[in-house]
Image 1: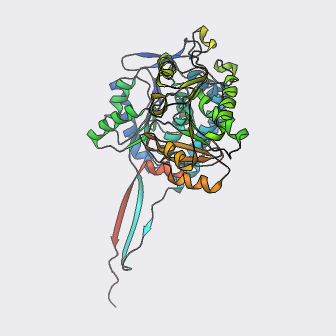
Image 2: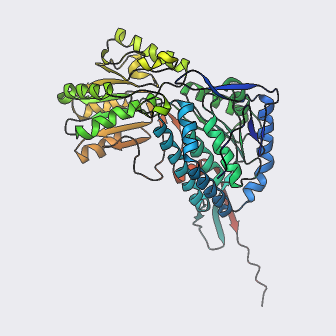
Image 3: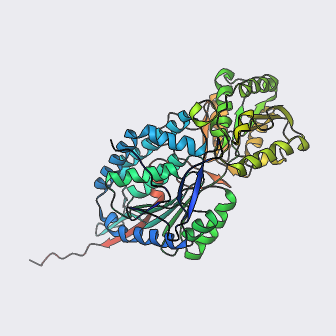
Length: 490
């Protein structure tokens, strides 16, 4: 098995590793130490032009490739990911700062996503339509857009690469991928494995660069036919404005302020560890992180105490120590989270545990303690804004109606988790909550294959995950045919 190697100061365009046009470089930094791991090419507008041109040249041939062949190449890509799990896991973990086991989990998820779309590639079909008389025929075709720009953030780069690139390629599009310059190594490595799997040159191109430069050039490029963006709500709005100039469709996966809603009849032994894990996994740097804990008043005291005990027990360290939680990804994120920790008491919240930097950060890394605040004002920044760190805000409720009101008292609509022993209550709240995803007695979508990663409101709009994701990367064509009678007279 050939070693997985990413050339320093390079990018992947038209099937070849190459330097940026101006030879610019960007450092990739280990969040646990603040030291540079490697460099990647810093793409500029000219590099974006090259990548889009390569993708456009490759598109006709790739779109004409049979769906079965596209599926075969995706399956080979998935197999290669499986052969390089440990190398990819180290890149993912060190790049982002998460424990090695977390990096490994992300790679397994990425492999599963690619494998899913390998099997789905030849299942993408249109429909036949009823007609008023037998001499008419109506049907629809699902056709690829063309060149898709995919822009992903730094928190789970392997997963997000697979979740966006695999359905786009399965549907017959070509892709220009821009991972975050903060954590680009796993996406580059995955692209190298796609190249080894036999994808034609130009089908998948990968550039790293600063969002204001590379990202802006890509999202405003006239050669791009579709944009997929994962990131902040603020940037998502800017991308929509850029896309409007070229009338390009946009898929947005944005922020979240997801509640765990804990009723008194829930199994606390199951719920509480999952709730703590939902805000400490990846140091809380997930769009769906369970950053709000809404707890029924009758058990609030016990729940807060038990959550605090588990948060205090979270082991913190660098990626290779493979403990429970790593650092925040960079200094900017570290300063942002500390700002929330400093302002929360002034807004009336009671600090229960945590509240500042962790001792592990003395060596130069950006470590923060898992932090729990009780009595959080629903109007406060901590309640309403996405922290993107291991900070949990607790609020109490009494009864189903107030629980629903508090669940919906947010601008976001990504994930809501309901913990209860009452099935009727769970189903009723699942119907009424304004959220793209709902989980009952679990956090997120564990155990469900092809679960759609949907969102509403300020969390964006997307048909992500599962079979629907391929349709997100296609446009529908309707065909109506009149069947003329050409039977020669007798």
